[in-house]
Length: 60
Length: 346
Picture 1: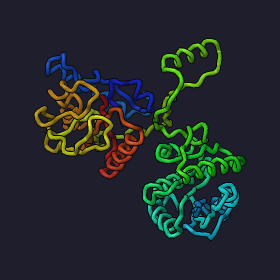
Picture 2: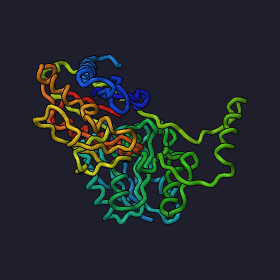
Picture 3: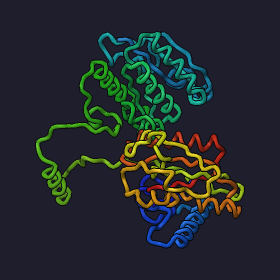
């Protein structure tokens, strides 16, 4: 499992092993200040990071 | 007072690890540490039955063992059920916790067990039960039995139970009202003063500690993997069909995304009282990134996206709730044959 979150201290406290930093509590996998296309691109990259973390044996 | 006592094969005097496969057996009267326990309970206390089971058998056939123990405790007309002490024996602690929890909720009689704080049974059951902190060493048997007996007598007599430190049980994470002499501000300043001058003080809030979770191995071939999306951000279909609470949620749901490439705000709502939900309401992919995951699926970067996402609301929730929800979700993930999960947390 990989956790995408903006509340990093909580993820660390509970011992989450694979964490990808999200883009804010209110839109963890998005960014309302961007254009629709830019936001799509950002979400794509976030998900790619999450997939990378799933294939990694290193804690991150 | 009629007491039923549960022991594993070792403390029941049957044998060591080579007998861990033994089925549940019952003995008349007290056995092993039960003899001293009976004395310590004093008065008219009588261990009418001792139930002994092998640790492997008990853990591998937990439901069956629980059912037979419940039946035997009921038949014995027990007024008190005691399991252990288990010290650091993990399987013994797990089954003792499970049995006490079942007897307490099904038969509504007092239950007491004892184990070390590091016992996995302690982590699972400390919030539901009074578990005397036995420490790791069975050399402390007598001390532990004294504490178990004292606590058990109070529970049976429905006397007030003191704080964990006073009675010797593991913290249950309960909060209760108490009258104190000084206001919080005064107590806090006193504590700070004690701290800077090196004096003794005792914090009134102990942060919860979490057992480390072993890291699961990396996914070998994502292009063949079944991936599931889970969120604790409270995204639910319009109308919140499972009535997932926006705070201290006791429930979770599985919602179909079959045939969808993208989540529309009109179809969903957010049941979560802990963040401003407007942005996710506008476009739920900002919480559950379905659109991006469909791209990954089309491009063959993942094998398949599971056709449901799981959702609950992660706010102000007691650990006993969240642990259960986590276990239930993990069972679902297993059942569906999922290889990897992406959890989005607000």
